[in-house]
Length: 599
Image 1 (cartoon, rainbow, N blue to C red):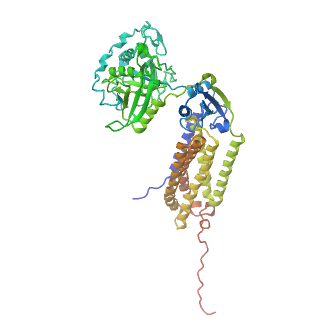
Image 2 (image 1 turned 180 degrees about the vertical axis):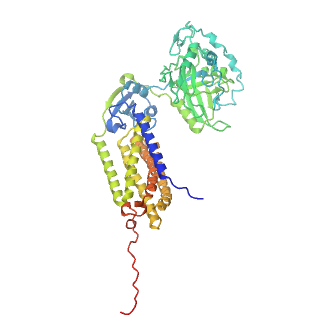
Image 3 (image 1 turned 135 degrees about the horizontal axis):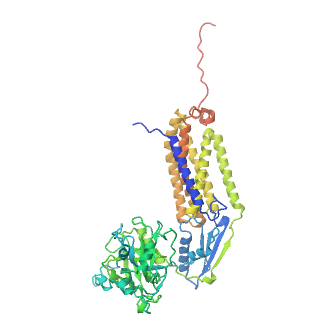
């Protein structure tokens, strides 16, 4: 079987088309920059351009554990990807200091994001995209059947205790036609036009959990209309007909329209949800566990009977309200939703009656999914409250002198120039491949930094610049290994075309192994380090991946393409592959004289 002939020209064309697409995406991202007077400029970190500092002061002296937990939650909000280089630190025993790079036009929104309590609520599902239910009767839409993924369910924490004693047909305990119990001409309030908070009929009576159950089975027309007025985008954001974020109020005493978090099986689902029947503050505990006598993972939750919330009509608390919901929903396909900041985390059905507030959410969970859900339930809200009057927001300058950035860039430029000069002197014609490869790698890196600045919040700090400079040496090392392999093959008498292919087969294994080790090192820094060191690890890993891409899809095809020209294939002195350059013996051979005849 003949070996496949390399097509360097085609590979180079595909590479440059990919580069053009990358710069096209970068141009689109630059169209929405906040500073149009500074286009095509990467976002800089706190050390190079300063930013906004927010100082939060707790209302009461919290425990160190609560203060550290609040700092962790806030850090996830402002620096979720780990590359925005935002700094969140504790100060004293009551303060949390948040420093975000860059100028912030909307300080109020940033302040709200930082100190919001992250409201966690349990609401009842009236209808959804995949189960229109009562909403289908109003819109004429037929039901879409079950979910693509096996539905989550919620059972008692110990399935052998209490499930048999509780009635299994609890759904009949609640009125099935509850929509008629709530007059449609009741006073309305909120975005959906539902009855005013806590007053379903406008007669001074307070909402009860039974009213919520009845409403979920027959929501009012105003709420159904609101449900049909919005859609969910791919990121789980509720948007209006024009595609703009709906930004509806997340009122615990009002029904809401909400989206689920993106799911690999079901995508994003839109829900119409009842008012809050249980607040997150009433959740005592949540943990990921493996079920007794079972396999897989579940999320165990425990609700208390605290009096933190004014429960209607003397309700004993969340445990009693949850029991009432479970009696009505057990054995049916009716769902309740766990909602964090107006986004649905999960939406299980009831398998049995929950009598003591202890239950477990069952589903096709992996260990990480169960841990993530448990953490969201347990730590969704900040454990401390902040004093609004003592909150301060101020602009801060860069932590490094203004010449540090120019000095770092100058150092990088000098190092790059020295590498190019050395390669041109030592490799001659092949040195042009080094120069062009470094230039292409710089173009790709610059485009990726700009693109990530707009899409992932990546900011460039001095340690990040150091990571980019180190990549120059890594990239040059790739060329040295490849070129030396080619020279070794040519010393054995092979032509340049053959030497390029055989040398590449040996060099690529070495480069992939070396770059894999470097990527693993960068990954360890990114996962376990914090602050600027995390940014350094990210920059180092990014440039290492770019080095591999350039080596495989530009450098190697370029050398194969040059091997077709006589200047290189014949071993010309300017090619860098002459016998003198390769260290081969070039002394002309002399045949010994043959004596003949008489003198």
